[in-house]
Length: 174
Image (cartoon, rainbow, N blue to C red; front, side, top):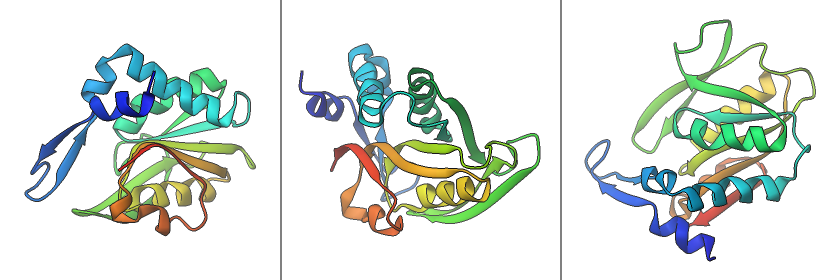
């Protein structure tokens, strides 16, 4: 099976979403295909190895969908990073720039034990703003970021260059 081709065939472009000029990468067809979805989860787990991390961070919202099964299969806890105002307890917050605006994300202050090894999982690496902000939140919370795993890297936006040496694992690069 050519997982790279399967993934690319199951991601559709939606023009002018969420605003004119943006080409949104819709992963819902991939999620609906059991073979493609399982292949993505298995590839991330196999890349890092079971038992190598303590927590998996999923970034709202599509990162949750990928991160939760990865956490389960790796024997790790799942920690959500959410948009500002969505978490119920005390949080750290971090603002950042998107390719089409600005955002603030949050993480519970008690999400990690000091020295927890943390893998960040998201759907797309674009400009790197979200991933960089999530990594900063993990560090502020006492975790050690071991890497970032993404379904797709949009290399033309050079997001990897903004991640200050963070190890990036992308299943597909376009």
